[in-house]
Length: 111
Image (tube, rainbow, N blue to C red; front, top):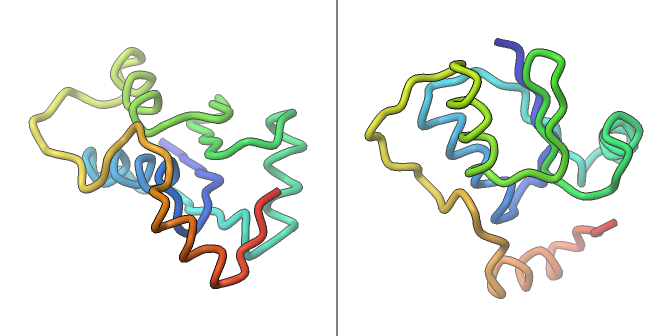
């Protein structure tokens, strides 16, 4: 499988997608949409919208998805088999107030 994930470096939704990739041992390209504006522009152009995460799996683009939604897609299409491995992060949760405060201090720009 070829997987590209358009993610923020630190975000509840993005960390949920990473947790699903790890849960199933999937190799993926983690594309930083905050630190590289060209990556963000590519995501918007490809997905037709501005919200993240966006995940591309073998040419199928899943726009504005949670880790839980990515997992559902993978399972429904037989791309992974169910397992009992616990995700390393919540798979369907936004950033906490603390995470938002940390991003503000670091000067991360939200689009």
